[in-house]
Length: 348
Image (cartoon, rainbow, N blue to C red):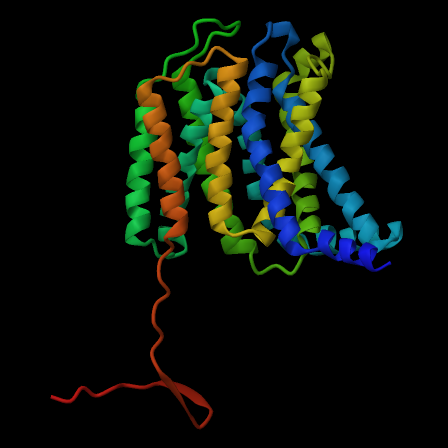
């Protein structure tokens, strides 16, 4: 009985959540570009419809989050009642979610455009530019401080990504004709949308007392309707002609479920892990994607590509490990219940 209780306490230890979440997030970030590339590099009639894939991802998120909350509430009626209170009655907070929900839907579609036109490792490296855009947005919109080492890291990031971009050449053996300009444009747009959504969520929704699973239901529910409209508007003819699940084989299903779980893994990592571990996860994912591309696909990195990738990895670690120092607070005294700063007179 003692050993069983001890094992149970170890399994519920937040440290276990932290490391399991980091490991799973690293695997997810490294494998997703590889699976997406394998699923997209096919004959046109065998490629899945991206809007359908994004639509199914929202359904999976709804199912997963609803299952977790149902297990928590232990009552279907109580769960539905709580959903009605938060989503419908608190419509002002729900309306605030519309912007990031729309952004995430657009971003998921851009993800496949980028990976159709770029090699997996190149995508992973270029997408790290979101750190630069996020830092700029935080600086100007939320007045967040950036340390000197972080500015150096951002400069290194620009150098590394530029190096990778300038020497990039599409693979010679491919069933799909690549357009690197379109691919890099999609990645750059993703960097801006990701940064804006992150800053928006922090500025508008950070003070919300709604738990993370209900917040994800809000996002997924709105994303469900947005992606359904996108699917109908853009690919209704293709769905009629080729079917709803065109190209959905085991790889595509695994990729769809993995991508849906990625957002939930990030939530776990944000809650239990620190920024340094997240930075190492990003760096390891880039290396994992490079090794996977080398083994599975026609990818032979040259010296400049390896150099640019290493510069990006160094910049990620440097940026994350050197946050700005907290500002020293002025000494304060309380006079008649009012807090007033004190002033130290310097003797000459």
